[in-house]
Length: 162
Image 1 (spheres, one colour):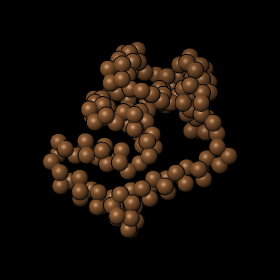
Image 2 (spheres, rainbow, N blue to C red):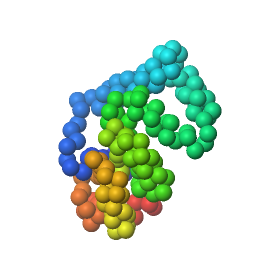
Image 3 (tube, rainbow, N blue to C red):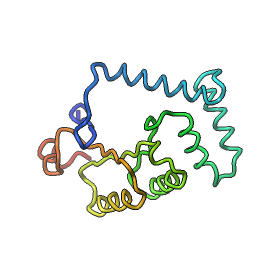
Image 4 (cartoon, rainbow, N blue to C red):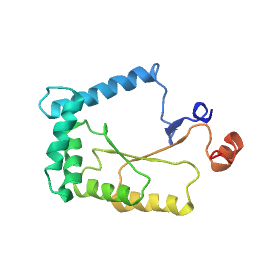
């Protein structure tokens, strides 16, 4: 299937395969889940911690909730161990704006996925947003086996949606 043929990497080629990526991912996930539990006193399961956090954030005014969640993430997770993944649509731009207002753009990883099928206007918007928000580092993930839409279509065909 197509899933076995596609792989993502940072667009600058820095991505390196781990000896055991599943084990590494599991350790990272465990440490991040422990950080969530620790953020509410260190007792119980991650599910218990999420219930506590959901209660805490839902008690806030609706307009305050997103910023408080972003501040909580910055206080809870190590720098660059949490991310804003965005396609630079309206909601992604709003969250990126909040990160800028809260001076958290250096704390979060900002990530987007380039499918190589984006409109030229989307690429232009990404560049404008990088400049406007002064995003210090944007990680762009794309297929590691091809570098252009033409290469993609030669390798995988032009009708993946079928």
